[in-house]
Image 1 (cartoon, rainbow, N blue to C red):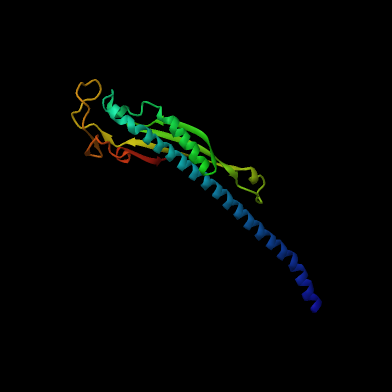
Image 2 (cartoon, one colour):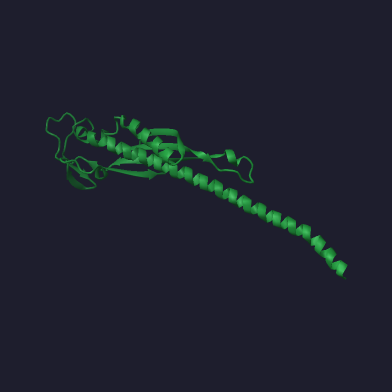
Length: 198
């Protein structure tokens, strides 16, 4: 009787070991998936911040050009045609990617619809997923992309003529339906909006 019980226990022990090993493997596999997700989320955060930083820097660069745009052909609608602001925006994107332990691997500044300019960036994490039960993860970097847009919130008041009009520039601009004086210049946040887009 006793020897029968010992035999049953002896047969159950290998099954127990296999089950424990399987559960441990599943636990490590879930941990590896979590590591990969965390790395991917880090890359996306870096991409978002780099794109937004680029658009915000562009807003700072465009501020001093606003008054000149009021008398230029096309008025405020043509303020994004001078792409010189993109160089400073690129440097800002590189800086913010680095602050999030990533490298800027893609850069595409391009016009959107009238009154818009977009910055599309791609980043690659400087760190990897790390060692796990899944082979090769210690060499895997995460990549992610994001697009931010800077959009003009203002226009010239109705009846105002820009371009070669000999009249002095308008004393007001219309932002989100409200007239605002340009002297002194309103805060740039009231003139341009910056946001992430799909």
